[in-house]
Image (spheres, one colour):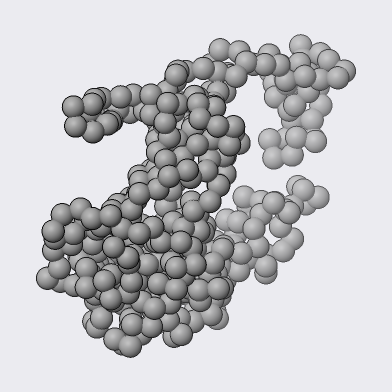
Length: 387
């Protein structure tokens, strides 16, 4: 079976019995099967451990796994891929411009894109911004975005189609404000099957060519470690990067892990997207969200990719399945070029239905931080020579 705009739109109609698409990809480390890879490490210095039923038929059994990249992280990587293709595909984008806050430290971004807002259309950065001097919440565009729900999703199609895929919770408007939610309809994770170990740590020594003594206490400015001197605060030179520091026990970072197999499982739910309703063209809006997810998946994971230090993976085998009314059918994998064409085709169909998409998607809408947000940014990132 091959995927095209007609098939996708039909699957997203209200009376469709089709359930979704499943993509299973077997991955290998760059160094080959069984080589170590570094799973994500969470607060408290721990991996996300779990168990899965694995195998088929009589060989199916429960196995230990470590989640190498979980669902929220995968969504962020897909959004990063959309940002990289934003200009080519003409995707909608809102930009928070921080250039008026100069001087800022070099590491602080001068712009934040709506593709990196932590809560997407429900984000506090969007709430605490303004458009041409007017609080964004009080502008027609802002009012529409913050009033959007799954049952009234026109503004999300126009400005945040990624929210239809990856979900949102409008939880930053106060108790009297909207609490609208939409669960994610694209779910993806990468897991390592049957880890050889799950608690190996990287032991070592942070060296110092002069081996400075760390016995005498020092005091220092928490913001700028260059401003330190010997004092009586009980701090050590090792706290600011000097001296030999052994790395042992729980202080040692978790090491990479060898797995028998590494698999990425991704699904997009037509059933979930049928909760999304628009004033016109609801099937086209839902299909557009699917197409956006497919192009993001192909862009982010269709070739070798880097997740973090010690975790470079490449796809070696991928299987796409159409979960339809007549059961599960093989689906021809969609290449990046085909996915881009699919986005354009569905966008044109959506535009023809009256939705604000396709050629009507605007250029980036540029916002500025409100004074309270600007003050918070300056307080968080004071310039060194002004301290």
